[in-house]
Amino acid sequence: MSEHAKLAVSVGPEDHARGSSQAPLTLVEFGDYQCPYCAEANPIVEALLKTFGSEVRFVFRNFPLVDVHQHAQAAAEIAEAAGLQGKFWEMHDVLFEKQDDLRDDSLLGYAKDIGLDTVQVHRDLASGRPRERVEADFEGAIRSGANGTPTFFVNGARYDGSWQLDTFESYIAKALKR
Picture 1 (spheres, one colour):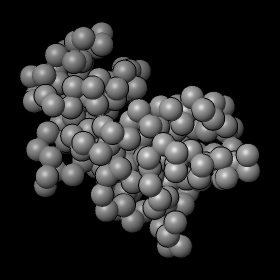
Picture 2 (cartoon, one colour):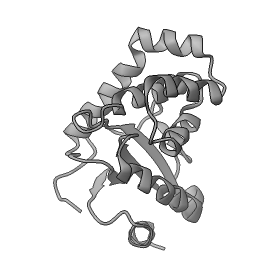
Picture 3 (cartoon, helix red, strand yellow):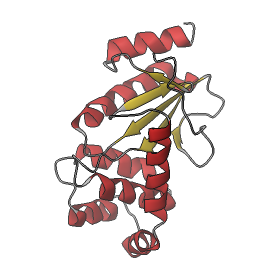
Picture 4 (tube, one colour):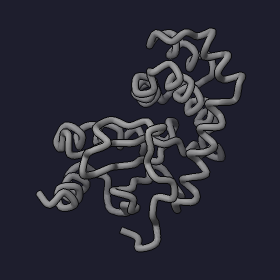
């Protein structure tokens, strides 16, 4: 773990979180929906949440690497638009499942598939609210020292170890003093 890499923007009620705000450990991921490593990490995070249950809260923040992933920004924005309708996690999961097809028309199809009001999605995207949220997450990632995806923070400190299940699970168990 890096001595200097700390989460620059504290986790708050506006974050997309799974788990209780009272959990003793908060895991924050800065991710990119088009990043193959983030898609690989997604089921690992799910397994960690199952293993540690109420002891871990998971927060996802957007870090679209647009220089290498041409659809990452649009995917992040559609996830945020889904969040405005209370379906962030449903869209989050679909985007990783359908990572091979993140074209704009497909994103709108996924919105319809999870039951979003697509007229409202268009309005929200046009308003710029989802883009502003993605940009704020991205800026927070840069300020926190993230330089790739996925980047994880455990209780505010960057985790630089392997995010493969056994290693990550062991690290979290130690952090929880299990």
